[in-house]
Every structure is written in structure tokens, then in C-alpha cells.
Length: 195
Image 1 (cartoon, rainbow, N blue to C red):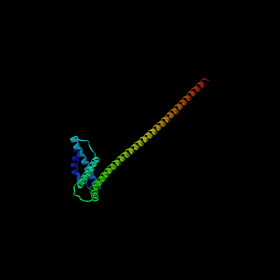
Image 2 (cartoon, rainbow, N blue to C red; image 1 turned 120 degrees about the vertical axis):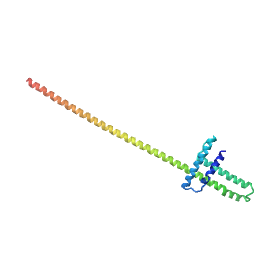
Image 3 (cartoon, rainbow, N blue to C red; image 1 turned 90 degrees about the vertical axis):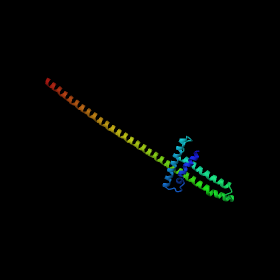
Image 4 (tube, helix red, strand yellow; image 1 turned 135 degrees about the horizontal axis):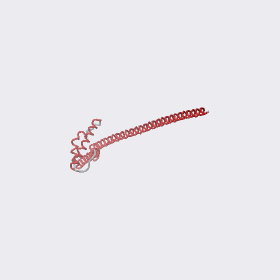
């Protein structure tokens, strides 16, 4: 049942999927078509509650299997009916040229596309990871520079505070010296008066 639905959905997009070109526009169109097939297939499965969702790569493999079965059925028809009356070598040559070559070519294309998609995904993931690493490094550098700035600021504050305390101490010493001199003068004055 699922396979029939899948093949019906494929018929809508067959003209896009089976294009032999491999330029950027065609590949983009094929990707869009496969994504649409995947969405329609999964929507059908959700509405009928059959099986589980499949991704694009799984559907491409299912398509490759369907093509292989179709070619196999064609071969069986050719060999079972006496439509093709030749020697075994010619029949093998025909089979290789018609179905096997097409199937292998389509399988290779599908695998190349899935490999390309996988490579693109891996490149995107690598780019994201690299960006995250750069951001983490930048954040770490920023935090280190902020810590150095804070450390320098605290050092300057401590230096200013020490200078301030030294100045206060020096002023207190000067005040005390002045008081001491004034007391000495007073004492000397008293002694002079007493004499």
C-alpha cells in the first residue's frame, strides 16, 4: 500500500527527478521535488497512521529499489516469453545494456546525490561548529581582556589608595611635628618666663 502511494506521488515529479542534467539549477529543482515527495508521502502516512516517517534519502533508496524491481520484471518477461529468441550471450548483453546500465546509472546518481547532500550537510555542520568555536574563542578573549582591565583598574585603585594613605600619614606626621614644635615653644616660653 505504501509503495503504491509512493509510486503515485513519484509520477507527479517523474519529469523532474529523471532529468539527466546535473547543473546547479537542475539539482536544486530535484532537491525541491524530493522534498515535496517526502512531505506528501509523510502527510499520507500521518493521515492513514501507517508506518513511520521517512526522510528524502530513504525515499531515494526506495525509488532505486523500485527501478531495480521494474528492470528485473522486464528481464523475467523477456526470458520467460519467447519474444527474444537469441543465444544466452546476446540476451545477457541486452539485459546489461538495457536495465542494468540504467539501474546502475540511476543508483549511482542517487548515491552521488545523497553523498553530495550528505557532504553539504557535513560542510554546513562544520561551518556551524567552526563559527561556534570562533565565537567561544572570541568570548574567552573578551572575558580575559575584561579580567585584565578589571585587574589593572583594581591595581590603579589600590595604588591611588596607598598614595592617598601615604599623603594622609605624611600630613598627620607634619601636623604632629608642628604640634610638637608649638608645644616645645610653649614650654620654652614658660621656662623663660620662670627664669
